[in-house]
Length: 413
Image (cartoon, rainbow, N blue to C red):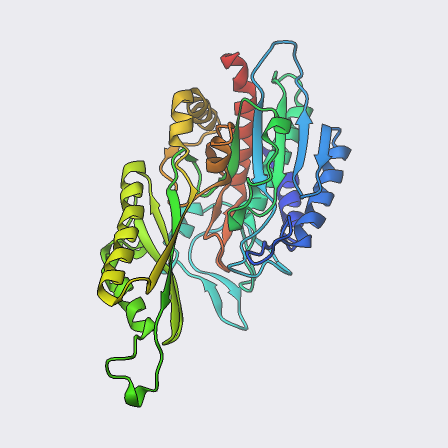
């Protein structure tokens, strides 16, 4: 795999210099111009590589094709990664550094500000002893989520071009904006993409293979109180903040993100805003089970009814929204695409780690748009954080996983 490493790393170090934070408050698509700048750069790179059907649409979605190199009719498989980085941490002026042959222990990111990637706080870093690790200077995120995925997909395509002895069918790739704010699939052109199935290269540690995610919803309580002079408030005032506190007390604290793991769902308190006259309480609701998710949504309706019974009709108004669903029900009838990914990982020297996503993914929405789309590891650790890092050797294994999937499709024809 030595022929992959240098060019893969070169690509990745270039890609992370693009400022591509998405913005939840924006209505434009993509939500930031930096994503378009990056997409145009990639468009030119793909054209220079000789790929066909290179299309960058007016919303920042980039598509391209690696044509089949044999006459055998095969399913069309796709690989997808996202252009944006999380707005949770600055992605501007990223200064990556490669710690070659990491030997364990703390990694000093910035001596002046004493920013340290410490083993005490992040013990998983010592799983990468002997690897070359890319870190930040501690003042931005790195952007491995998901520029590692982009670098891996393009590097895999380049590898297949350099090795025509590896027979493969038509391969489609796509890079989309605004995944980090949940809009990545909203304008994805599934018919244009034209794949039988695809994989998002957007997972974390080596071996991750995910085809289950949360069912997701949101609950927003609007509380209308009555504000009067506090000196004369007895029997008149209705403090909206106290009603808000009552709602929070009613929702089970033991079923919050900080108390749950694995397949356990939760109610996540996202915000309390307002004052005596008016207040708002917002939650996101998650569960892998469709039945339990439905019960969680119904529980919020019961909270609304209870509060209005207690404080007066119309005091509390609830807005419930379903955001996305568990892709498992779309992938399970086509488990051969999971078996193919598992086999491809094993050929690359990777032990598959199948586990549920405790979050969402573009693949979940795409699966319900008719494109079954599990998620494969890209290698990044500590996403959305100044402590984000990625192993170059794990990225190499992700590249070979893509190559092995492309080669393995012929067995499914």
